[in-house]
Image (cartoon, rainbow, N blue to C red):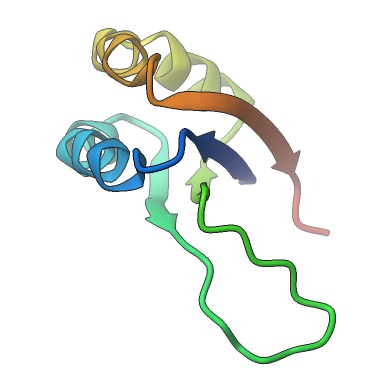
Length: 101
């Protein structure tokens, strides 16, 4: 199993529109072979001194059976369509692909 943490920075005022498009795509992603878990999350104020909050970042938490499943996911038609729909809403994307030890 691998875990993916995707940080997606959206334009000011675009978070709700982004989440609507993203959430619409979730059922298709969860139906993919190899998808274990897939959901968006936003910062919550836990009042911790080391916490960095950013209302313009949506964090995507994913679990896949392996790297091959992740590559198939990224190349799937519904993900290519999703990327086209959000391209004007997103300013930056970063990924962490992790393996539990």
